[in-house]
Length: 196
Image: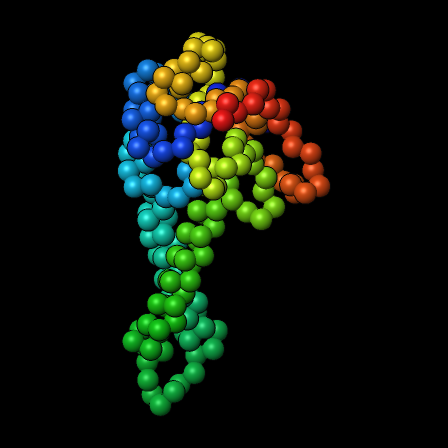
């Protein structure tokens, strides 16, 4: 994975963070991610993120579960083991509804859960770089990716002007890797310290 450079700005107030996001985007800087200690309504809109497609994936998984149930039950009762039960039809859709419903829900729930983990690169064995450990406690962290055209000192000054209380420069791999935090050395280099 490629190692990229990032300017990390730390904010202590949500009311300062929201206008700062708008100003950073207006200035043309590339926001890699914003980390917050709790969900914030409207953050995805402020960052210009599109709506999630997880509901579409859930529908596809549900249809797959329905098809699997109907195909499996139909094969068992019509081809593999057709039993004459009191003269009833082998194709009894009303009797198949509970199992079909349960497999639809099971496929949809498990599929969306695994898709969510994959898209967010989350799993017990996955390691990712933490730009600011206090992002899970009481600070808001804005990570701006440095490109060939951007100047780190200019971005640091810009973040200071929009209300960041701490700024530093970090190098990190943008993806994820398999490992444990307690045994593996982190492949990240911190340059500079937070100002606060």
